Amino acid sequence: MPPPLTTERLTLLPYSLATEAHLDGLVAAWDDPEVWRYVGAGRDGFCRADLDRALERAKERGLLDGELLVVRTSDGAVLGACGLYPSWLDGGLPDETDLGYRFGRAFWGQGYGLEAAAAVLRWGTEERGLDRVGSNVQSLNAASHEILQRLGFTFREARPVPADPSRTAHWYAWTATAA
Ligand SMILES: CC(C)(COP(=O)(O)OP(=O)(O)OC[C@H]1O[C@@H](n2cnc3c(N)ncnc32)[C@H](O)[C@@H]1OP(=O)(O)O)[C@@H](O)C(=O)NCCC(=O)NCCS
Image (tube, rainbow, N blue to C red; front, side):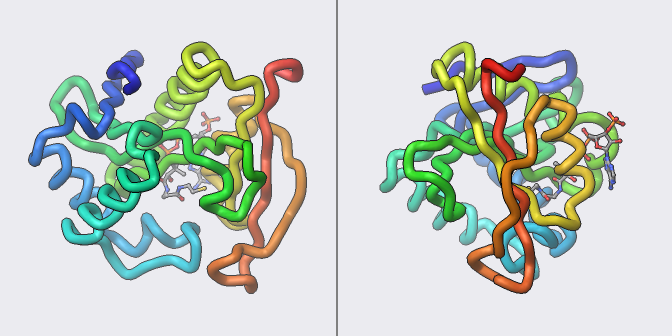
């Protein structure tokens, strides 16, 4: 299990330490089609049953420890989640690990995405010993491209998004030797 990670403004909690209020906060942050606009084929909203199902599925697959809830330390607000995921979940390489993040719209544009992603990348490399981390971003998701580039990820290739081949995913990778 990852320890809670802390940054200047954020606390990143594993689900095993999350309260019911944290889970409800995450649902409130994610229940917005704008949050899902560039995720898979998009979705209309997100409810508590969706979260419970996703957590159950992650538990069955042994993946629950990869995603961390992102909590603003000053007031306990749940901003979203950020984590490390097996790349195959998104159609990537079998042995690769991907960085991902998803925050509520009210919290965008304040540097939280970059702050959380940097902490998770550090956790992956320093604690989990990864020397390569991938990520993929839909072509129109400007903020997400910016975060990866700021962290030192480099563009590898463009591929159709499996859930909606009319969209394009840009695959990036970060490698310890290039950083
Ligand atoms: C992608 C996402 C995590 C970005 O989080 P955020 O907290 O708004 O990002 P930050 O405030 O840390 O911004 C990071 C950088 O991107 C830039 N940026 C932010 N929004 C931008 C936008 N809409 N267009 C272009 N650049 C943008 C910022 O200026 C910042 O760069 P800077 O430090 O040089 O100013 C957030 O928008 C989100 O959760 N979106 C919905 C889910 C999603 O798309 N997840 C990613 C799937 S790949």
